[in-house]
Every structure is written in structure tokens, then in C-alpha cells.
Image (cartoon, rainbow, N blue to C red; front, side, top):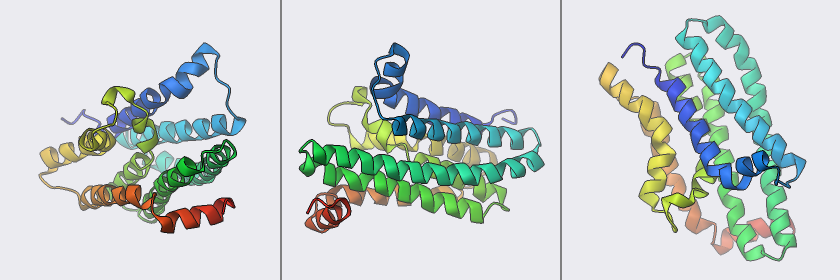
Length: 229
């Protein structure tokens, strides 16, 4: 088990989920040359995949004992994470604006809450991870949680999971990058990290946003934000 690298494998699993989920609507079209999207979408994808690559690199540096390089690279990680948040919000607002312009207000406004709260979850875990950067065991788990918080979009596009998707199956795929290192922690250290338990609870409770997204309270806020009142 000493050669087993759960955090590197968790990052590879995250990348796989992103690629598989977005293959029909993005990556497959990129390779076929049939993709026609705004440059902002390409920037967002590049930043997100850059984040995942950096996550893998950071886990690898720690596993080979290059902790000093890991810390130095962490400064770039803070910049990249902040950029991911900003670009993510821009992409969401752009997509909502297009939906409204196309006459799909009734779909665009409820949709808006989901990715925005994904980004809010990412921000919460990410900022907490930065705060706990001097505590490696907590820091690395929070970074995984932050990234997993953004996986709802690619998973929701996995048509092979069924239509409509089973909530249980959705959560199994969603939480798989967390469950992998969690199981290793339980087996190797005989303890359950509080960070994962708390993080999983927060992610499960975030499901309340689905009914909230169709509430009049949220729709009023969304109309105010988008100017579609």
C-alpha cells in the first residue's frame, strides 16, 4: 500500500470525469474540428484543466518529497484558483444571457443558481485550503473537495447514466474522487478524516438548491441580476 498514491489517482479520476462528461459537447467536437463556441469557453476549459494538472503535480511533488517546490508552486495555484473562479462566473453569466436572448428565460434563470453555487462551494473549500496550507493533511483534502465541487456540470451531461439520472448514481460518480482517498485513509490509518466527512455533508446538503432554483425568491434575485425583470 505504500506505493499507492490515492491523491494522484483521485486527480486522474477527476480529469476522466471532466473529459467523459464534456466529450459530446466539447472535447469530441474539438478533435473533429466542428466546435463553434466563444473564446471565453476555451479559456475556461484551459484554466480548469490547468487547475487539475496542477493538482496532480502538487500531489506528485509531495509524494516524491519535493515539499519546498510544492510550496513555491502553491503561489501559482492561488492565482490559478482565483482565475478559475472569475472566468467561471463570466461563463455562467454569458450562458444565462444567451439563454435569455434566445427566449428561454424560464430555463436560464433556474439554471443560473446551480453553477453559481458550484463556484461558491469551490471558493469556500479553496479559501479554507489556503488558510490551512501549513497543515498538509487538511490542505490536500480541502483541495480535492474544492475541485469535486465543480464536477456537477460534466456528470449531468453523462447521458449513459440514464435520463433522468438517478440521484444516487449521480452522487456516486460525483463523490468517487473523495471516496477513493477516504477509503485508503480508513484502511491505512484506521480513522475517518473530519475534513471529508464535513465536506461530503456540505455537498449533500447543497442539493437543496435544486428546488430553491425554481422558487419565486430565487427567480426574483435572478431577474434582478440579469436585468430580465
